[in-house]
Image 1 (tube, rainbow, N blue to C red):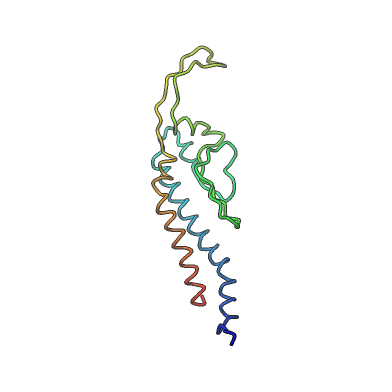
Image 2 (image 1 turned 120 degrees about the vertical axis):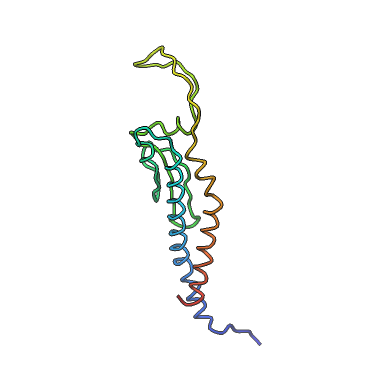
Amino acid sequence: MPSSIRNLERLQKKLDRLPSVAMARIREAMEQAAGEIVALAKSLVPTDTGSLRDSIGWTWGRAPRGAMSLASVQMIGGDLTITIYAGNDEAYYARWIEFGTKEHIAGGKFKGATIPAQPARPFFYVSFRARRKSTKSRISRAITKAAKEVASGG
């Protein structure tokens, strides 16, 4: 005697809805996490003119030209790629602040001048590392929430 699943059609409709609901929930979680990482990085960055602080941000897709990319997270099989970045044409020195510099002899306009070493003043990667675990948890909760929402008919 063949077995049958009751309400198979209804179950299939719910399963078909899961990817779109899950993508929306994951997108929201990724945006919230990126915002938190950016806020932490902005609070840690040393400021002089504020240009570097103002250059820190996130976007869907690729980072702006000249920016240092902190992370680019892409969902497999989806179109969700979020990038967290710092630096731009005005704040081109983001890498020098994050990683520091060695003493060196200048070229160009200041040829022959000795440029002293600058210690690293990390603000960018430490922000990502500090929020990494909570970001993963937030995305996992978003997937679970989406599954529950679809299962309940919402």
